[in-house]
Amino acid sequence: MKNLYTSDLTKSTYDAIIIGSGVGGLTTAVCLAKSGKKVLVLEKHYAIGGFTHTFKRKKFEWDVGAHYIGQVNNPTSLIRKAFDYITNSKLQWDDMGDIYDQAIIEGETYNFKKGLQNQIDQMIAYFPNDEQAIFKTNHSRSIK
Ligand SMILES: Cc1cc2nc3c(=O)[nH]c(=O)nc-3n(C[C@H](O)[C@H](O)[C@H](O)COP(=O)(O)OP(=O)(O)OC[C@H]3O[C@@H](n4cnc5c(N)ncnc54)[C@H](O)[C@@H]3O)c2cc1C
Image (cartoon, rainbow, N blue to C red; front, top):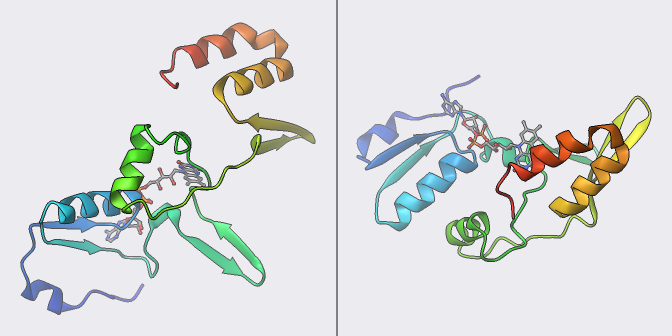
């Protein structure tokens, strides 16, 4: 890959240098910048965003990573507050609908339903013999 960084970057001083412009790096950079720090973010890829960026081939568009995020429908959730803070509340969210994902395994379709209890009920309907394990796994989490 060609070297995109220039030596001009070393002529300034920074309070923090962040390697990588994924959501983690950019979140940290924004928090530091908002608290008055001078921040340099270095990214080796030609597009910023890490696993949040998208790319196009002909008429199709792909998400390389993140395609949905939980809990952001709740304005009081920590993750929603964090996104509101780093984007000055400019990031808009769309509802994924009642079925937010599907797994197709050996021709069988498994729907992933919005809402923890809905998802537990759905998984138990698919795998009735594993009810105890599904229940135990989900109730040991602290998702509200
Ligand atoms: C296929 C897939 C689907 C996913 N789906 C979801 C989802 O639906 N919902 C969800 O919440 N999460 C999802 N995730 C997880 C989520 O995308 C990641 O947890 C999150 O994006 C990671 O962010 P990050 O900043 O830690 O790292 P990254 O996004 O990986 O960013 C790291 C950045 O650092 C750069 N970098 C690395 N080394 C250097 C270097 N030496 N110099 C300069 N730059 C460098 C990389 O190029 C990259 O841009 C998914 C992940 C994958 C792989």
